[in-house]
Length: 300
Ligand code: AMP
Image 1 (cartoon, rainbow, N blue to C red):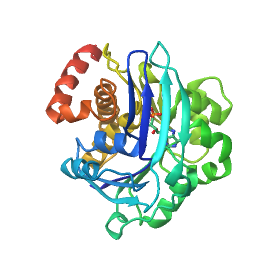
Image 2: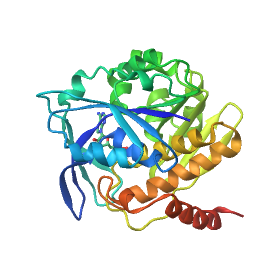
Image 3: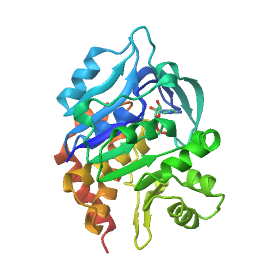
Image 4: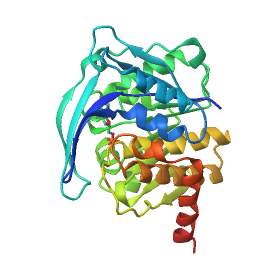
């Protein structure tokens, strides 16, 4: 089944308490696409500038990611984001955001992308997500991500988008912010009234929660000591989750639970390195080895 992702593509500068990396590949789309590619083919839509290295396109191709939906703007500069993590490796502050070509992004889907059955609208302006949905013909499953920025500055567009998606993935604090609720479960249930049929709440190192009208599923995070850079963990979680769902072609309870676990496990590898570094060292068999460990830890 085809899985399409639209999201940001970035050059990130990341500072952690132990290391700093400049202009490394980041953005919601690469993290999501690479994580999803362990489960099947991925179509990627985004925008970059003339500074985009050809080697990244080749890396995507080798990984089964079709990046023909990645627009390269002549004379333009790729989106840049810079963040610094605190000692606890969880909290971070944004030091700099240069939207560059992302600021004027109007996605144009290649003809071959318009019949995608599974669609993920990663963190970005809700208007971008709406424009993508206008170009897609009858997807089976549409899931979106959002963040505090869009809740604050694009609430009307976000409300329109929520009525057109099947699922919403967001952080604990964002779910509370969106609904003005203090309890995560109450917040998630309230989001179901805004349009989505299910909500996945990401709770960072405390795992994730799936809530629909009749179902509630919970998955803890994989306990890892080796956190090098948590950037993109949320996008990687969503990529693993959606990649697995697309590979199964259904959304029954077993698929949902396995998808939450795969999302968790893929993200647990991602944070063990900067950018996509750790993903380049693993494959599906490595993920399944960690799955066996996870099963031992959580079954009772
Ligand atoms: P996460 O750690 O899941 O929040 O994802 C971090 C990634 O999101 C980084 O690689 C950034 O390049 C990208 N990013 C940061 N701010 C934004 C934004 N306003 N819109 C889209 N992508 C962003």
